[in-house]
Amino acid sequence: QNKDWFQGTADAVRQSFPRFQYHDFDYFLILSGDQLYQMDFQGIIDAHIESKSDVTVATIPVVGKDATGFGIMKVNEENIITDFVEKPAAEELGKWSSPVEEQYAEDGKEYLASMGIYVFSRRQMYKMFEENPDSIDFGKQIIPYAVRQEDYKISSYSYGGYWTDIGSIRSFFDANLYLTQFLPNFNLYDNVNPVYTSSRMLSPSKIFGTRLTHTLLSDGCIIHAESIEHAVVGIRSRIGPSTIVSQAVLFGNDFYQKLDDTSIASQTKILGIGKSCLLKKTIIEKNVKIGNNVRIVGDDSLADKEEETYAVREGIVIIKKGAVIPDDTMIGLPA
Image 1 (cartoon, rainbow, N blue to C red):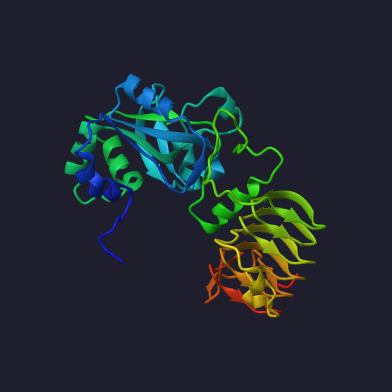
Image 2 (spheres, rainbow, N blue to C red):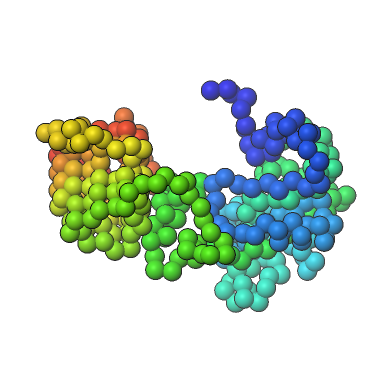
């Protein structure tokens, strides 16, 4: 509730300066919290040191239709950033292409988009903040300023691996469902670059007659559903008989109920999803109680809206944490 809390990426770093002064270091590595990617950060740090840059910006090659949604860097043959534009218009893209590796050029990825990942040399970081006391954002203010100053060397570090922004409901939803594909580029099953999660020591999941395909199923679930496809099912999820789940992200539950509680006649007092429900194109937050015969169906034609127990964003229905959805409720479009 503090209105002076972090106002942007640069402001977050500025407000944290008092903590940094107790540590001896030469470089800042600035990362984004709303992106999904697998990068070895040693690569960009080594490139920054070797090039003797003041700032190194991680960039990713994109095609023209995607370039209009990013900050685009103009880079020369030495990987020095010579200019920057925020979300260029389609008719101006021609002058914003940069030299890229042949494999990217063949795919039409001639534009270098900022990934919001930076390496700063310590002294230059403090200097830039002194010169821009009112700036609160790296991508929109600090980096464009530094690029246009002759006394700063700003380099590009081109990254060609998997990367996606998950800062919106749609991108978060799509990134989760993408993980259910046969061989997604973001690899959860990698001995060299493992992805860790909290060790909860839960029991194995139990499944009773459910047809499962393209689904990530977490621990501790009890599943009676008819079918689940293209879904991420979170811990301790409980899904009743004859229920169909498709294109859904279910967060699961923070705790189990006692057996006495689960024998209550009313389904809306039981954590989880009832029987004979249809869930499609939806995100179900944690600790939700969904009754029987409930239909929750998202669709691109739905307008954004905000209700007490749910919201609609970009055609996706989001059931809010701890919400209770009564029997026979219909949300979104009937299938």
